[in-house]
Image (cartoon, rainbow over all chains, first blue to last red; front, side, top):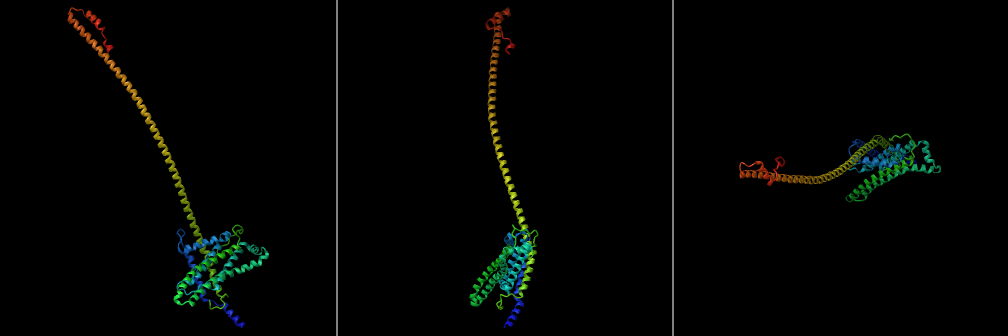
Length: 237
Length: 170
């Protein structure tokens, strides 16, 4: 019995969910296309449409990252903006009319990948900004709190991933339940209402994910007032 | 997703999705977000410049308004001064005209009075001369040719007074 379970687990670990992977790649392509499209906007012209949304998100991220030292602010806001748009597009992907793709964020793989990557960037930036000694001192002062701090750092990506996954999984589950419980003519109205709510939930979850990442950055990075690193950290991850 | 009994356990899709997100993150952080931020900064700079221009124009308009107000006030003050000078000059001219007219009137009146007096004297002298001549002629006619002109003249002078010299009368 145990051998069967181990084999099943191993096959699960090496399996690739094609629909989720494709949905993720499509979301990545959409985010890249939108980003590159808004990048081409002329400087002097007033921003409109998607360019305006991108600029609003960049401005909001810059404002949220305002307390971290200036040499890493670009990386913090860049990560936050990318996370926001990637999560938002992934959340909304299944809402596109006629889309056969599921929301990739309703699968634990993407949310965990996003959380692990985000926390990886957070700690990499903290290492580059503080140096090894400063980075370790941040966790070892006071020394008796070090286990709690390390546990907290391990839990952060899990909470990030599970929060987003739980919301989007429940959202997908609600759609299935509405279709299963209610007869087709009656289910239209709740389905439409839930879809509208899903749009809202998708944006809120993307915002929360990006905002929490910025807060995690702020927790480990030196603030503007106490920044000592003379070398700026490049903005790309 | 519901087909997977262990849906909380990540599988190999995790790696694909992480790679996809890292790729997006690199492109976004390196090429998109900095460009958007630079563009926003550039636009903000343009807006600040435009606002500075507007503020400068507003400041210059205020200065021009102040200058115009000062010029208007100066013009009003000068106009009041000119009006006052004109009024004063008018009063002075009227007074001067009155004084000159009065003097001229007095001078003319004096001159006319003197002229009347002179003409009266001339007329009286002429009348006296005519009367003397007539008296002498009448005395000659009465006495005849033998009469002495000197005695006749003395007789006439005795009654009519000495003859008035012509130069004195003129």
